Image 1: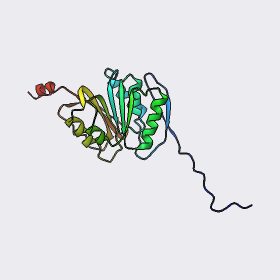
Image 2 (image 1 turned 120 degrees about the vertical axis):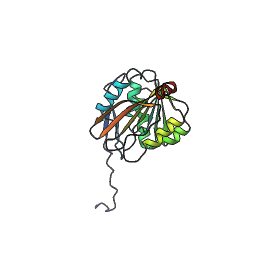
Image 3 (image 1 turned 90 degrees about the horizontal axis):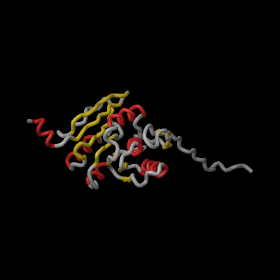
Length: 208
């Protein structure tokens, strides 16, 4: 019997990409995720450099992964001994993948996932953080308002760090006077910067 011309077409499963944790407790673990527009996990090379910078401060740190995407930065932080990490993303599919990774790694007690815009989370933040990762989709002007809100609400602990990743052709982010540039590097079309939130007394002394 002839088949109907209106037969349904079987959907092909979405192609998977792989994220590799490069250090710490889960070193070498590979986690699959589905690529999506604007989802651009921080490369192994950049993550390795960043976490070398953060090595003296990562153990026991309270971390915040804004624009979490694949969760690469926050998961790497947890692998290397961070006490906790809040993952924030407005994409439900992306956050479901992060939740799956958290559970598969057995990190459920140290991770919290929040499906909302970064600014919405910051406006009602539960407390301060020792390390904040800011790695939004490029070209959407998302860095500046987040930096302003973090500084205004004093959400970064004194002595804490703020990581900002942008396109190399974008202007350097304008940050609070008590955010001091700690390290900066370029990798291909990405520039990544690590700021330290210095104590107010140190800022006053510098001005004087």
